[in-house]
Amino acid sequence: MKFIAYSIDQDEAPYVNIWAQQHGIEVKAVKDDLTAETAALAAGYDGVSALQMISYDAATLAALGQQGLRFLAVRNVGTDNVDFSALNHEHIRLSNVPVYSPNAIAEFAVTLMLTCLRNLPLVTRQILKNNYHEAKVYIGRELQYQTVGVVGTGHIGQEVIRILNGFGAKVIAYDPFPLKQSPLKFKYVDFDTLIKEADIVDLHVPGIATNHHLINTETLSAMKDQAILINTARGNLVDTPALLQAIKSHALAGAGLDTFEDEPAILTAATAGTLAQDSRWQALLNEERVMVTPHIAYYTDQAVQNMVYRSLDNLKAFVETGHGLTEVTKK
Ligand code: NAD
Ligand code: COI
Image (cartoon, rainbow, N blue to C red; front, side, top):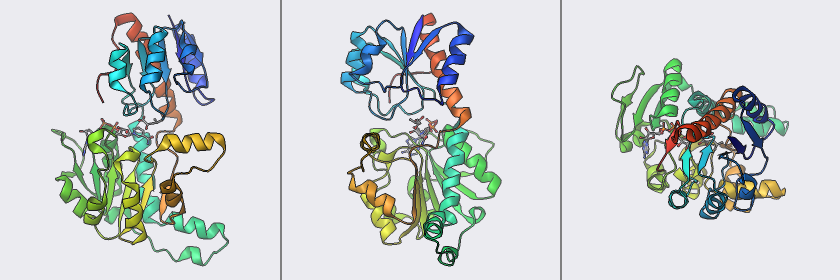
């Protein structure tokens, strides 16, 4: 058996090599993303490992199917960028890595909460302009005294709550599938109550169609005065112009965003060395009370190692048993 791994950079390459040596299985690592054009590279391999924010669209999956590939193992959690009907049409089986380090994303979400509470985006802008006194005027708030509303109590949401329990913050949460039991300290409330009562609204839900613009003009206007929004989940959960309006009108105190509505366009522009033309993106970057990061909440040594190993473990299991270890059949 032999596999091909797409989008492998310096950070992942050592783990690919270690896994290949440990298992005595050839894994070809390529830098390219998996697209309709690059699918030809997979000819002759038994499975594909991939990690990308651009879509696994119908053309890409058809091209993979033409090469006889039947196993696709993504190295991440979210599968919202996969065309499932094309996947089924090509009889390609999919796996993800549902738990590579929920703590990595949870720590980052809490970092964004603290960043916003202590006004660091504003402070940093002033200090970089050498405005020392102006950088000292932003009085902060303490996490301990905030009510944090965690939307989604899956793997990541639970880790966030665990960390927040350590800070002594009050935690309320909403999930249509609540945990039956948990050692964590928090209270389930309905979504509307969470939105109304939380000082910080923190999103940890998938970017599936039903969650599109979960945070919109209506929800933003129901949020507490001076509330903060944190989104490390998926960009499409938030209506960006509505958020910008809430920030500009000072209804919201700030936002910490690791994801954006149209990341492929930003990536394409960044790769071309040009400015992204999306005015929503530029407006977010210009907002002094918004902290924007480039989808890096997951990005730790621990997480990257697990992403590589578990995706290759999935491919091996697919070939040996016909089943992936963590197969995904629907979004
Ligand atoms: P998970 O599947 O363990 O948990 C998601 C939870 O959300 C589930 O309990 C589900 O019932 C709940 N949910 C779904 N829709 C909801 C809604 N409208 N309101 C409230 N709850 C809802 O997933 P996870 O591992 O916790 O990951 C969550 C998301 O985080 C992923 O889907 C992915 O989009 C994102 N993510 C981002 C990064 C990053 O680097 N920024 C890394 C990993 C995952
Ligand atoms: C995920 O695992 O779902 C992420 O958002 C990480 C990213 C590298 C795609």
